[in-house]
Length: 469
Ligand code: GDP
Image (cartoon, rainbow, N blue to C red; front, side):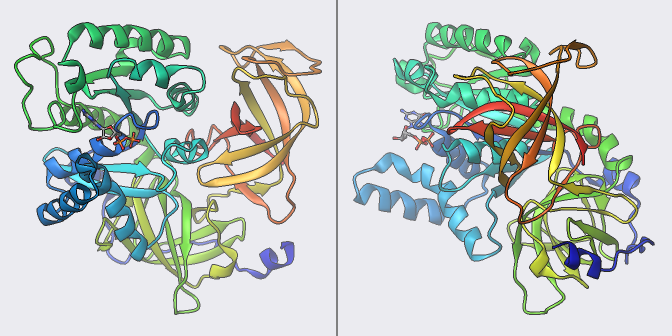
């Protein structure tokens, strides 16, 4: 593969956009706040029903389609399922267009644009939750408030704990807790506050503060508390915003914070999926703008192949409409010319000309372990995840043990094993020698500078990339 890399020509000079847009003016005046969120929660917690309800009430799905789904679900005796099918239906539709291993559903309200990040098919499967969480700014956690249901989802084997721990370790700043299925407990305030107390203890334990967690009583099934449907009389104890109003407020806050990453950072794009094209120098890349912005006519370089290509078109939304600009946080499809698609894969990274991304097999990582059955040792085999990217790896060396709260403080210089709930600097090496992997450090980008380590089917640690060899 090294030979191929040398064969490509890498641009040194940037090229100008075809119809230049002033980025600062654009985000100040035209761009609405945009929020990516992932939906987490235990199997049967009501995630699909809730998202179906939300998309339906907002008007993002066709009324006829809902009617048809309802009829179908009644025919098989599962009348309540039609809302849950909405998400899957949009998934199927997308699969006829550009397939992405991460599926996104867009919707708009008057004050913000949203993308629901979803891993179709395996919504409850942890590696997919990792991919979803890594693309999101915030998480909506669906909790089944039904009697006993909460307890079963919240025991150690339940996904609620692992999902929220992943969210925390991947810098998800806000968790919106959809206190779901409140209709099944007659909108009981006692039940609501009991679950809230228990969950808040857990959130605090993993490092969240109270103001980072929002709580909304709702029913995804009948729709109260989601968007426009008012609460029933029994619910006279909560006067806060609905789920959508909460998400709008969070979108505005996230937008203010990410403004700098649009204006002051280079364009970096993570590729989720590559589709084929009939034109042989054209590549069609679905992915996410991780920082900066991009316009048609600009030149970018793709890593690890180090090929420079021209951005011919940028496509956005469900209809894949052409747009003149994409900024940090947006999921778009890039149509590139002067490219070699056979050497581009999901997980690859792109950047603007002049910004170097290193590729390698060995990385220095700041690793923070979760609760594990056995400590990690030099030579331990693991799986490494970053976004959609997943590779077998080995922990080569345990370098130093450091303070969890203050990473600049070395606690111990010789480390023989790494137990649960500790932080250490380690050297990790990818063991499949097929390809070099582009990596950015945590200082370059806090989203893609982060990896998750799993072993024996469980998440055991989160890592921040410090150095690429
Ligand atoms: P998921 O596995 O988390 O996506 O959960 P689903 O959305 O498939 O819902 C699981 C079950 O709970 C289905 O039978 C739904 O009809 C039911 N359900 C979901 N939301 C509600 C709700 O708000 N109230 C009631 N009573 N049932 C719900």
